[in-house]
Amino acid sequence: MFFCQTIRDGMPLTMISYGVLFIEALVFTILLEMAAFFIFKELLLGRSSDIPVKDIVFSVIFCSFTTLPYVWFLFPEILGATVVCPVVSEFFAVTVEAFIYFFVLKIGLGRSLAVSLICNAFSLLAGLLAARYIWSG
Image (tube, rainbow, N blue to C red; front, side, top):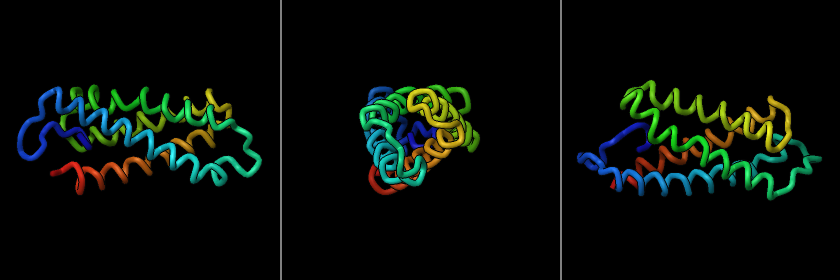
């Protein structure tokens, strides 16, 4: 999909192949955002952060499972393959995930937004690179 595309190698994707790409992207997103969270944890939350690792792992997985289906299935249907689709998708993901981090991890809204922005930027850039160099065939 990477960015609201329904064509791969010049051919339309079937729903099954699109679903397989979605599962790959979901796993890829979870791993990348988990890595980003732990890499930037001290910067984002400070040295004294005592958030249990299990809560961080749960929140990152929950965020991806909550937002990625909208980004991959709903927004492309509504917005089509336009420039607006990735903008709206990323805004949605960052906003929803910030609230999830806020409520699950019980950190301030500003820190939640910073965590969400960094995690999503990390996975967005990696996803664009993967779409260009790995998944493009």
